[in-house]
Image 1: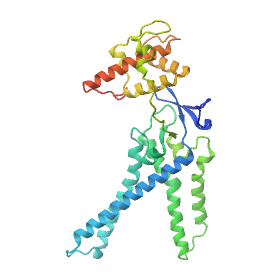
Image 2: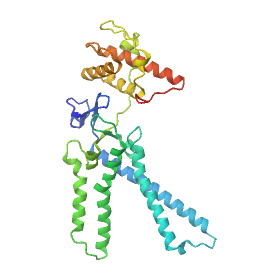
Image 3: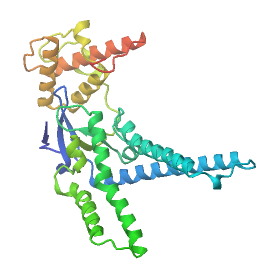
Image 4: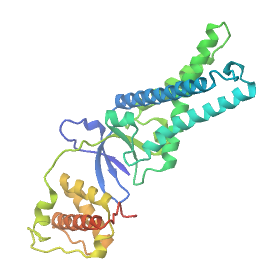
Amino acid sequence: MSAPQTSAAPGRDAKRMRTLVTPEGLSLPITLAPRGARAGALIIDVMIIGAVLLAVFLGLLWMVTGMLDGTSLDPDQLSKGAAEFLGILLTLFVFCTWYGYFLVQELGPRGATLGKRIVGIRIAARGAARLTPEGVIARNLLRDIEIFYPLVALLVLTQMAQTGEEIGVLGWVMTGWFLLFALFPFFNRDALRAGDIVAGTWVVERPKARLAAVLSAQGAAATAGASEVTGVRYDFGEAELSIYGEKELQTLERMLRESRPEALAAVHAAICRKIGWDPGAGDERAFLEAFYAQLRAKLEGDMRFGKRKADKFS
């Protein structure tokens, strides 16, 4: 689920602010990536892939010619079958490099290619769902249909026209195809391209890391779990702290730093349901501060003994 953000942080474009609901039911504020940043990231990625492919091709060519130099084998006399086989291998290499570049990086923990990381954006799943391999594959396959296939077709048609061949209205058809999908993000408020709609993804700005006060030295976290409001002491057992891992700890820390009452209440209720506590009301922040401090201490203690819990599914 997603909804427009009603209040924007200073210095940010309010029109690009949204609220993302995570699979755990937490509401996180995000900022949609500008269209220019997305285009810039794609250009950088294409340049990186092109440079890698060119370097590999020239390297292999240098190696092969060097190995055959001075022997009875002449590369210029390569048989048709051998040339076709090498062409197939080269095509497979280009295919794996092109799609592997995007899939491996966007399915990683950063959710971004090198180009996206340079401009400070990443992809994220819309709605209360996780980013899936199927979604990443779909958005990358559709990008070729939206942009690169019509561009390649236009280049071929241009070459044909220069040699005097009749292309008819095909050039206009390809131009219309390209413009339809290239301008598609300008005609919806979330700047989604067709691949984003099919895959259920957003492209958002990557949060910039900034030093902040240590949460474990504030509020109930600093008073052994005791609330400054009600005086209640919150102590959680091993089983209750074992339901979450590092990812959930980071999410909880982010929510405590933002201090939005409605978000804290939702997180408080979600944790209470998980551990079987009566949520009550009015002391949500103290509860969450104590839970954060004790969960962090447990995870850090486990790591000292070589045990690591990345998330609640680990």
